[in-house]
Structure formats: C-alpha cells, structure tokens
Amino acid sequence: MTDITDLTLAELRDALKRKKVSSLEATGAYLANIEKAKDLNAFVTVTAEKARTMAAACDARLAKGEARPLEGVPLAIKDLFCTEDTLTTAGSHILDGFRPKYESTVTSQLWRDGAVMLGKLNMDEFAMGSSNETSYYGPVVNPWRSKGSNRQLTPGGSSGGSSASVAARLCAAATATDTGGSIRQPASLTATVGVKPTYGRCSRWGIVAFASSLDQAGPIARDVRDAAIMLRSMAGHDPKDSTSVDRPVPDYEAALGQSVKGMRVGVPKEYRVDGMPQEIEALWAKGAEWLKEAGCEIVEISLPLTKYALPVYYIVAPAEASSNLARYDGVRYGLRARGEHDITAMYEKTRAEGFGEEVKRRIMIGTYVLSAGYYDAYYLRAQKVRKRIFDEMMAAFGQCDLILTPSTPSAAFALGEKSDDPVQMYLNDVFTVTANLAGLPGVSVPAGLTGDGLPLGLQLLARPFDEETMFRGAYALEKAAGFAARPEVWWG
Image (cartoon, rainbow, N blue to C red; front, side, top):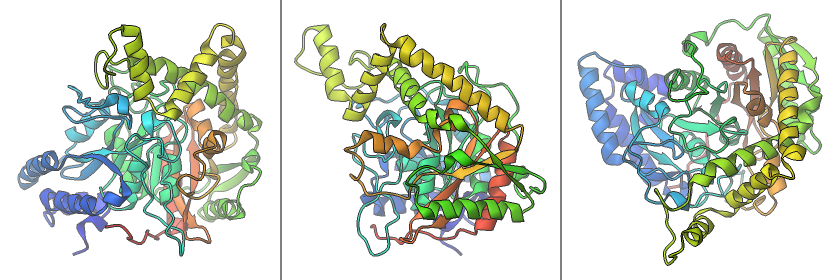
C-alpha cells in the first residue's frame, strides 16, 4: 500500500472507513514525519499523547461503523486557534504558558467531526507577517528549495507552519487564518491549496484576534477536494460570534467536477504590477487559457481602486490590532515582567519584553492613525475607500462569476531577504488583500513552477458566500494545470 502520509485527506478518510488503515497507524506515521522534520520548525507544540488518545477513540467508532465526516484524520492547528488545556501562543512571547480553558469554535467542530489533533503550528507573531519570520519561536522553513541551492526559503506567512506542514506531509491538512492573504500567499509559495472563505462563514470565536473586521479562518490542504472537505467542517453559524452569518453550509465537495461551461471569468487589467516576473504573467495567461478550454468565457474587467487596497489595509489592520492587543498587559495571563512594583511600569515592561518588533510597529501605526488629530485624515478616510473597493468588486461581479489573478507577486524568497524592508514585505499581499477588505472568498491553486523549480499559484475570487462556484472553478483549474510536483526531502 502507498505510504499512509502520501494519501490525500479524501483518500485517507475513505481508507479509514474501509478499514484498510487505522487512525492510530495514520497518526503514528504523521508523528514520525514530524519528528524527522524538526529542521522545518513547523510546530510550536506536538500533542502526541493527545493525538493517540483521540485516534484510539476514532478507531473504536470506525469499528462500530459510526464514522463521522473526518473520523480518524490527523490534522494540525495554527497556533492562533485556542485549544483547551493546550499551549496557545499566537507565535508570541507575551502568551508564554497560556493554556486556554476553552476550545475555539472552528477546532471544536473539527473534533466534533472526528478529526485528530497532532499539534499546534508555528506562525508569524499575532499573524503579523508574510514570511513566518516574526515568530518568537523562530522562522518556519519552506520544504521547497531552488534548483541547485541550499538556501532556506520562506513558506509564506502568517500561516507558514500550516503551509509547510501540509507540503511536507506532516499532517493530512491544517487550519489557518487570513487577514490580508495569510492563507493564500503561503499556499502559493508551497504548492498547497489555501481557501479564505467569505467573512462570516467561519466563526472567529476562540481565535486570537489581529484585525477583527478582516480575520477569517480557512483550510490549507493538498488539493481542492481536501480543502472543500475541511471547509465544510470548519464553517457554520456561531451565536458566540456576532459577525458569524446564519446560513446553511453547502456540501462543497459535491460542487467539484460540475461543469464550468458558460461561466464568466474576469481578468483585471490593473493586476499587472510593475516588476512582476514574466513567469507569473505567463502563468496567469495560461490559467485564463485553461479555463477557456474548460468552457469558461474570459472577460477583461477593470478594478482601478485596486491600487488603494494595500494602503487602506495597512491603516485599517494596524488600527484594529492596536485595539485588540491592548488586552495583553501581564495581569490576567501570559508573560508578566518581573521586578516592577508600579503597575504602569509593569504594563510597559511586559509589553516591551513580550511583543516582537513587527507587532510593536503595527501597534504604533494603529495607535497613530486612531489618535485624535489623525483619525479623520487616515482611519475614517481608509474606511470610506474600503467601502468604495467593495462596491467596485461587486460591480465587477455583474460582469463575471469569478475573478482570476496571480496569488503572489513572486515565488518563495530567501529567509532574511526582505525582513529589513517592511514595505517590500507588505507588497507580498498586493494580490490577496482586496478579498479581505471586501469580505470575498478566495482560493490559491498550485499551477506551475518557476525556472528555479519553485511553485507558483493562481487565485480565484468569487461573490460573497459563493464558495461553491469558487470550488468548481478551482477544481477545473487544478485539473487543467495537472500540478504534481513535490519538494525533494532534504530534511530529517
């Protein structure tokens, strides 16, 4: 039989139901892979004992023929999701020792459906970053390498642990979050499939907050089918989250393979940014051709406000972050600076020691744009432009059913290459951030390789709550691309 860890989530789910493999065997195989892959630094915490206990319970249900949708499937969880009695750090020193007494809604739904938790994944601190270099626990290393090079590359961020662990076969799939591209960008850089659902589709309750009007949970998986299976379990209305939308969750997997004939796919002319590599431009054109051959109609659309999306994001997101991160003060949980008897000094010292440089930078930007003299000039104006961007996107969907763009402006770059230049780092989100500002669903699908042998992804965006159409298009794109490359195992 094929190595258990080579099975997709869908294949493993079916093999477990047919009793060709047990959950304990699958869990053991993934734990062995995790042990060998310490060089990737993908995990903050490995919950081996908990995983085996959960797997044994799943095997008992499977033996009785009582399998739930994800029965016995081993998953890994981004360390932004609170997990009961399990260390939850958000990649930050300030949450040292924090073990929540509750479970996030998204993870509780995965356990409800029978999944097994392998551990918690490394990430950019408080999800602030595009390269997984801001984590207190060190950078995650991309399993992919350029041809003939040993340079360590970024797996993208902030969900770098999620993308690297899926690409390296350390789990069947992983949870992730996307505030400005933190699911789709790392998926593109590691040849995995990343889905950011519509804002409100997945509950944010129990997810450590970065920017509350932008954050959305979603899956990173090996292929479109696996992502569809994951999203069905992750999504759903939650009365504990006031932004959670009360509408039925479709069977996304059932949408796969349905004809895309007659579907209109928009190609925005403004997404041809200066300095974009020719390889990405060519792949984008090829993606449009693939969809045309599948029966889609390709239409050129115009999104002139696109150029304002990144500046708007880097006003709105830091503003919300400065508010959300005010709760970390050393009093109730996490790190507390010692040697200070004055409470104000203790607050200041705890935050100075606990937060990394990028988090401090964004808190300061956010506090600045919310301050009395600048609120109208920056924050209020950014919110008005955000509404205009949403209106423009919705008008575009009057002309098309899906929008096709590149996922990222480059392939994976070397660790340390952009960390001294925040603006260069922020530009990694140029193609993804619009979906967050407008609350739209988006997916990145692996579609090709650079001349150096590094993966590139293509992105599809859809109307709010039209993930089914997005999955249909993504599945057609995946089939046409026929992407089957895998990173050579250099670790372990």
